[in-house]
Length: 339
Image (cartoon, rainbow, N blue to C red; front, top):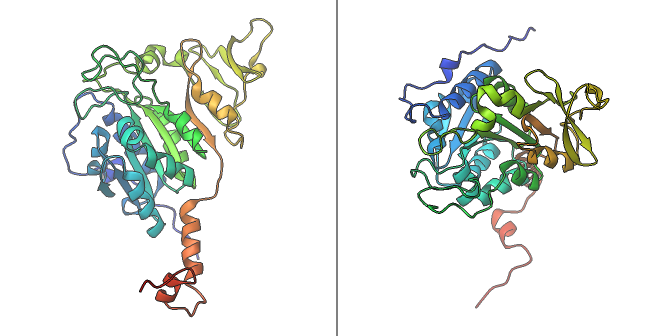
């Protein structure tokens, strides 16, 4: 008996006939194209995939994917995704969210889907602003950000999405930039293959209400020097000329120039995405300019117990080999009658 090779799909087979209604120039277009392109390469048919979103500009996403889709309520997409994955384990489930949807009203749900390690993929669009409601500061906006809701500058300390996820013991962590299609494709492929909650932060531009939010690292002319693309088992080398490295001194990352002060490529920090200790993942998540490059790529990929598998196993166990009726199970021995 011979097995058929997986069918090859085209990105357009994952696109719907709906008009894409984002502002012209929005980074969401690039993310949509990147996801459609990456999923097409998987060989998984669209009817085996579901996209679930909450509220926000990013949450229009399910309308543009020719898969199953649910446009749900503000901040609660993880709850819907958890239920769906438990009852339909064969579906590849994606949660599409934004920095406001997932880190403000949805912060509780965001934490717990990662803590439980439900087998879903979370894609967080971080543009550091509330775009759908026309430009208020968000949980990720930087201190001093002047917006319609903070005319004198925000005094809030921003949440760092990757650090929040690390606090929930995330098994899979990654970061990409909306315009970097190569890294995005690599990360989406890795997240799709991971069993458990994969979390990807997408640094995304809102050219209407927060244009240039990530220009200091995303602009093509500075990206090579402002970011380091981490890959498991490879040294952290970056720069336009590939002459810069990151090394660890204790737990403090430092940038060095290869060939200076006797330092070579061998002195660079070799990335271990499978490190069970979260300490170095936190160091990577906290790296930012101007002194350090911002990390992109897969930061962590460690296997943990998968929540939905355990739930299904419990249900199967509870339903086998028992002669008790449902009422007896509900009442049990720890009940009493009020007369």
